[in-house]
Image 1 (cartoon, helix red, strand yellow):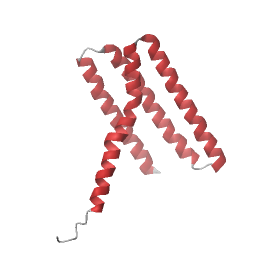
Image 2: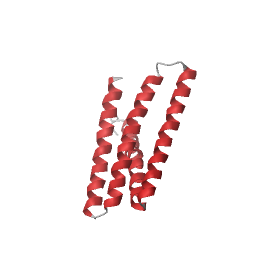
Image 3: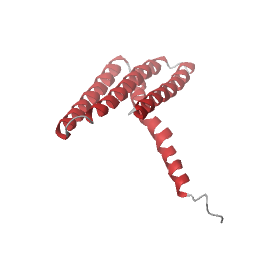
Length: 134
């Protein structure tokens, strides 16, 4: 379980780093409203990821039926929170909405880029046979 907490912390820091790089780019380009939305979206996405990790950790100690309900209920709450954040951002401006939507997508992009491709590289490394002398 300690490895999970280390991974969670590393992942959150990676998300924050990617979001900070995008935020600096938006500020350099003078896109202040999307930058504000990005801050909001990223903060909510990181919080939701952190809570989701805690939910899954707690679900392992529950009975199967209770764990299913607990995870599903928290899934609904998380997506209701996403909806409310996007609705709030849309009330301010399109820029806030696009930035907030981008911020909510950042964790998924980080998973795709840093972990999916890395997993393929690791699998390819294990498939090659370094002991053969061909």
